[in-house]
Image (cartoon, rainbow, N blue to C red; front, side, top):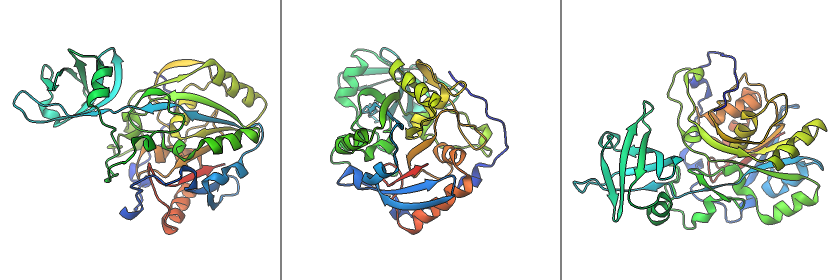
Length: 346
């Protein structure tokens, strides 16, 4: 568990609120991934302007290092029944060991330790309840992998009301390692053709794995920012990616993170502007006051009000600049959240 220190500033969560018209919440992905709108935000000049996502190559330089998250979203939502026949809901969060998972449940009160539920031939038991409300669930008579494959459904965010016709559109083209509950949505804009053009420009591409879970999407419920505690999320950085990043940092080349999950993985393991190969978890919470050690530029979508992801953006760029960009995006009718448009902060 990695916890880089951030000095307390006693900030109020309410300072990071904004109003988004509901019709600007994207309900479906673009027909073509790379035709989303893209807002270029320059931290130095404090200016921003609009383009189309596939033109992001115009803002990349030979020698840049672009890091993606190769997590693959699992069908993490299952609907077991209680012995009395009533149905419940389980959201798988994080695998603790073979057949044992940390989960969220609904209705929470019914899922007490010792309670058994089932879906057809699959029986499960709640073995523990943690203070955070997270429970431990054990698959009893068939493997967790088989149960997830057989009964699981992709857990789209609650603000997406339309059914997704093609579940693969919630996966990135890099999706490789099973474990994510949510998609690293900044990467949804990339196509194989765009990646080829980026490589031809002389940009190095690397991958980390961070499985987005409760730490990514749990709302902040505290009054002050510093009171919020992040939930652990599993991540991995291999030798090849670590060496690629460290070499670029020594040569003063830009490290570009695609998505907040990549930022949290790289900054979570940072030490003296270097990273090391790592496999474990992080609960790093990045908010204004944090000093970035690795990431120089950030590709990201537009995030929910008062969310940890929005706070991360406000730490990476000036808060007033981010909110000015958000006001512009709302005025110009950009689409927000998972299937929405994107921003490149340089």
